[in-house]
Image (cartoon, rainbow, N blue to C red; front, side, top):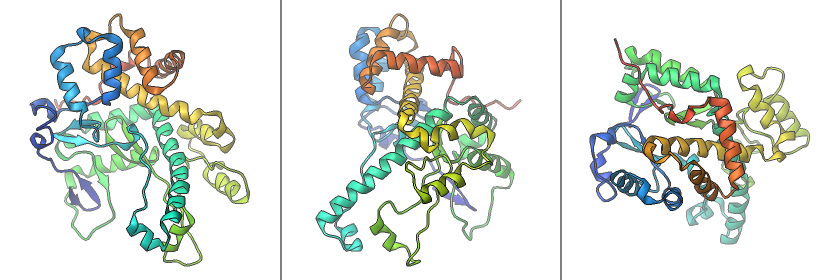
Length: 345
């Protein structure tokens, strides 16, 4: 990473080393390329039949899918994005036990409590991503910034904001596109974009279990930063105060639909789970059309079956999700490129 002022940019890594055993390095590795979870790819092949795929493309995709820690490659670098991976429980090791002055058994209890809470926050983040990727205004803002600033993005990567440093700012000519990105993230409550169409929502900043509050230097108090995209999950005086402050009379119009979803009285309706599934579904459905366009014809029903197995739901649920996505994004949504930078005239 390189840091310029309070903006951090990524530097390129040797892709030949990354793909040495799992794929071949080509100029295509510089382009944006998302990959399938190997489990989903195998389910699709089983339903459709490998004879209906381009053999060379399928072999390459299988090799790339072995890189289970990544979700794709771009600018010669691997892409990590936990919100498309299964949630990983936190583990309190011996060092954490020593710092917290807890026994091994107590640490296990802390892990259980912390992970129960973190899973709820993680579900909200994934569901919010699903809502964003079906929101026309968000996609217009997203595509406009990415496509108009493609040259800078391909050169520097997507900016990541960090705390101010003593270093001089040297962005000058690039400052406007960085400011536009910052405004975009603030408008949509994002910490960053990991890559095109992979938003990273602002996280809750809080000690997740009481013992972690002991690490707070201000004894007798605690600090929390809760973005307004999160539900409060329960009732009571403090949750009600938090709910009022997060979703009072000044809710931005462009977020109103999500605020209605996040309102505490709606959290029991499994809406979050639906949007979480649609987020991953629209992503991998689009990836399939991009990778295997000739394998789609006459195989859509089999694709429904493969995706229903992967998401552990019935076929009608997948079909309903796809209808909702189509209604939001239009009939040809799956053909929209992830990233199409404008060419300078």
